[in-house]
Length: 353
Image 1 (cartoon, helix red, strand yellow):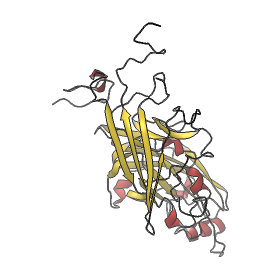
Image 2 (cartoon, helix red, strand yellow):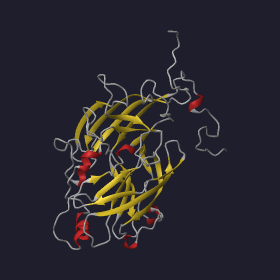
Image 3 (cartoon, one colour):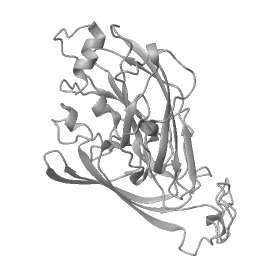
């Protein structure tokens, strides 16, 4: 046996995408995914250091704490990590906390996968304590997660490892949730006592919305010149909000998902789908179908709300903890790999002018 290596042309028997002829038809594949939010679908565990100090190193993995561990995600996608942080008490808000994560597991091709996030900071305030972040690499399974933290007390601080339908971050960011299970904990550590003052909170994705994505069925090459679009790997895509699972209510809201650079009514979309997009500073992967927004989701995708709580009020803003990410979504797309097509900087015609 030959060990598989994650290189441009891995060792072993068989053909690689680069060796497939562009007319073979084998370069095309269908992506079809149904996703329902589960913020601790993999596991959860305590994080932090004694006194809230910054160790500067990764602490032992969450899996060693013995909580139930479900390593396989519902489909290969980017995990969502949720942080329920408590600064050392008593400290009045605002408080700045620091977190960095290291994940190990496998990607959609069965290859060993590791992601080390940048050092992320969150300013916790009286209206924003709950936060999370999308990882930038695709995981089919997660074997363990390690954290490096600062100003986080280990007595009650928790990290949840799961996945979500929170694509548009503005809806969760605008929430004012008062019924949160951690509310009394945050109140005590904010004031040093249970003062009776309810601390509402939103859910802050701290600038990681661009990381969200689903693993492509094959390897792609999104870095070449446009032919003629910036995302030639996407030949078409549709999104559907299937239902609101907490009630449940059938919704079946469907809309075309415009790909980056593909004109609609003569104009390029401000917000839509793309290949291999990640937030600045993250490692990322090219083999990912995700979303982009040129104006931080101020302009949504026409006809559909990807904020995770589409039926809540007129704007789709959650008003309770259970409503966060309650939408179940389906995404379908026809994709192709352009590896090996020798895309040049200029188009070449097959005939004379």
